[in-house]
Image 1: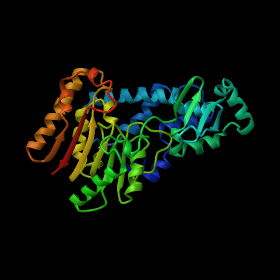
Image 2 (image 1 turned 180 degrees about the vertical axis):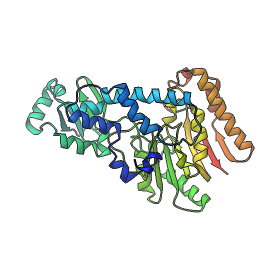
Image 3 (image 1 turned 135 degrees about the vertical axis):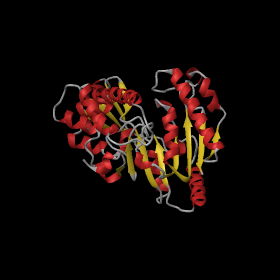
Image 4 (image 1 turned 90 degrees about the horizontal axis):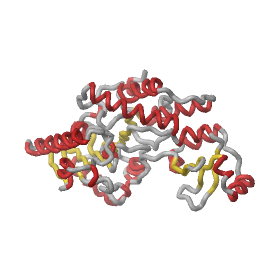
Length: 355
C-alpha cells in the first residue's frame, strides 16, 4: 500500500488514479452488473482504510473514533446505495443541451423524459442514451458535477459539496479581497510560496480558483466526502476535519473554511487541529457554527465549544497566537441550535495568527 496514501496526504496525480474512492468503487460495481446494495460491512471496510489508516494529528479517544466511524458509514451507505451518482450509472440517461442552465446542459433519465412531451421530441431528434464510457468521461471532469440530474421526480446536482467559488466564501466576498489577504500573508511571512488549506473543500472549486489566481500557492483540500472526481489541487486529504493527518503538523500558512464546520461532530478537535497545522506566522480564517452538527448531544456540543474557546483564549494569553473572534462566537457556547438554524452562514468568524 502506498506510503503517501496511508499517511492521508495524497498528491494530485495519485488521487486522480486512485480507485479506492468509494464513488468509483460503486460505479465499477454497478457497471459490472451489480444490483444489490452495499452492505454495512463492505462500507465499513472502505471507511476504515480511507479515514482511519493514518495517525491523527490530534489525539482522539476510541469512543470519539467510533462515533465518527458510525457517522461516515451511514452517510456513505446512503450515497453508494441511493445517491445521485449511483442512479446516474444505473439508469439510461440523456445529456440535453439547455441554455437556461449555468452549465449549458441538463441530464435526464429515460423515465423523466417520458413525462415531458417537449423532451421526448428533443431527445428523439438530437440525443441518444449516454454510453458507459461517456458517463465515466463525463464524471471525470469536475465541472460536470454541477450539472443537474433529473431522474423520476427528483432533480439534483451530481455533487452537492465544494462547488462554491472563492468570491462566494463569506470571509472573502471577491477574488480581489482574497488576493489582498494572500499578498499580505506573503509579505508578513517573507515568501510567495504559501501552503494553503481549505477545511472541508469538497470538490475543491475554491482552491482551484485560488491556484489560478496565484499559481505559486501549494494547495491542500481537506474533505470528508468524495465525489467521482475533484479539481486539481497539490494535495488531496480525505479525512474528518476532526482527524487531520499528523503529516500536516506545522505545514500550513493559511487555513480557510466557509461552511463546512456546521456539520462537524467534535468542534474542539477541529480547533486544536487547525492550530497544530499552522506554521509560525500562519493564519486561520474560519467560520464556525453548530446548527447542523452531526453530534446529536447538544450539551456535548456546548461543552466542546466552550472548551475550544477557552483553549484559544489561553493561547492568546500566553502570546502564542493573535486571536479575533466575532461576538456571536460566545453566544454559540450557551445558546440553542434553534437561533442559528435559519442562518445560512455560521454565526462566528475565528481568525488566528500563530506567533
